[in-house]
Image (cartoon, rainbow, N blue to C red; front, side, top):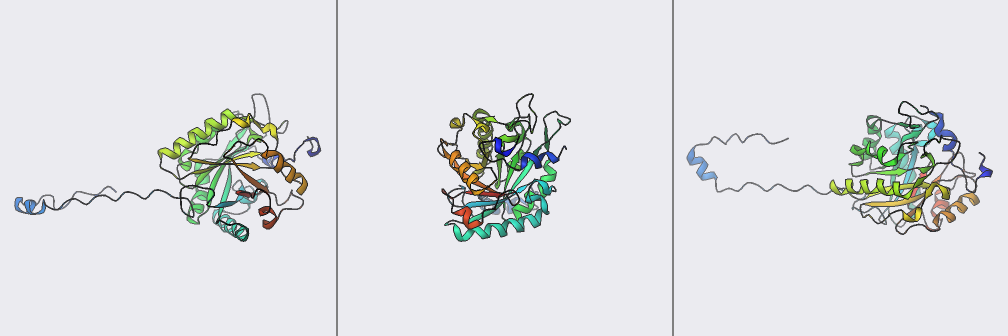
Length: 318
């Protein structure tokens, strides 16, 4: 399959991703006081516990947009071929993300929050032991990046490339991370295979029903844990990648959905994709943009990216 054979620009992940196959309080010491002492002290009421402050997003508040924009490093930890996030360790990645976000501040009327978009599950050329054509990173391998991000006020989005597994099943594997207040989710339909399909033969796709099942679970998790609103990124560069897209439910107040224009190429191709993807976009979904350091010709500058209409709410770099 060549880029010229597709109506929209390909993403480089078509080649790169397949490089992998791979205190409770103790008893009061005065509890055994004499009767007289007990009587004299009984008038003092017990202190009322102070309720925990509700969790907030980086920068404050509980709703993602329109109070901030985000700029993210994309990639898989330890794998530079899959994006710039993999070019350095957790702490260094946090510093790099913050420096990148700073470059966007002159062009935004609201604060720009740095972010990681971490490939948590990666499309693989072979089926693997579980036969799903997707390699899932264990939670413990992701935790250093999530912790470094939290220490440095960097948001985190966990990106899923599920192969023949469904998005909901994979998202549930990362529940303990998604229960944190500044961790969101990204779904990449390019790497969602139907039974019998394999990567690199066709572009994958997902139906709106599967997206809605995943976001319904995430919204419930967010609500039950009294968490601030979560970012949900939907990747797309071809119309076929999300079937029945008009049925995607963006009405859940626990979630902030963005559609990520995930194509690379010339400025004309990228803008063409950007315009087409907005046609028929369900109400409540904002637009997001992706820049590629190596594959875009040339890579948009922060000023050029910010000048796109509508101005992207979420920008990632691969």
